[in-house]
Length: 314
Figure 1 (cartoon, one colour):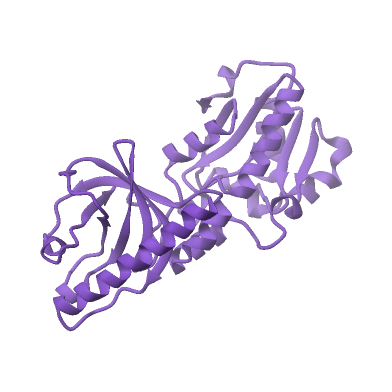
Figure 2 (cartoon, rainbow, N blue to C red):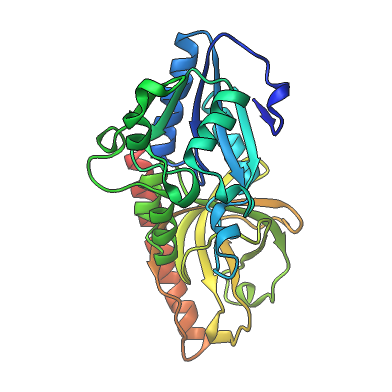
């Protein structure tokens, strides 16, 4: 897959099929659109082109609002590449670009620069100044378009609930990882380097790996305890994850740490990928370390039960 910002380097073929969007998280809805894109390109012996933007429009239009991403750009492009897309055309999103009308975007980008033959977009996708462009906008002027259009309808994506990047971010912040994973079509994860902590977990016989997350703008679940998996050096381990300030030991900063079951090797400095399965409980302040230790034993049993059920379902 090629990632380009200059359309002149795009190798011209007789057929270009395109989709447009930010695609944060590459969730089930995105996957359905990309699947149609790649299938259409293959059927017509052409190229599949995904038009995306950086940074996210909300970062530019609302710079004072806090906004975190579901995926890093690197991970997003890896997900898109796995789905078979030929080219990502990446546009820098600026305040000036935000003023580009839907008509101008269609003519300047899709027609003149990318010379597309077909556009495939989701039922809830908007583009252009003040989000004026969508499928209905295109459909109303279909006879004047230089390309064909196709809408991926809501019922093609999910019959049960709305799937969108905004909805997924909202559920992550609530800690509802079971629903998040259903909407993503894969397990929500974070990646980072294992760093030294305070060693308190080790004293309780629950040593933890503290994670320095690579992407500071990665959205994190709400504070609490979660069941999940860890991948270290191509090996997979089960365990429980804690996110929070650790009030029982008067922690002063928010941390992400994981207790790996049946694993005692030195992993400082190694990369660790943590995949979240289900929330167990809120973070709590206990009277003393003994009470905390008792609760951690209960959490471990609950984690094992959750992960065993997960294995059965899969």
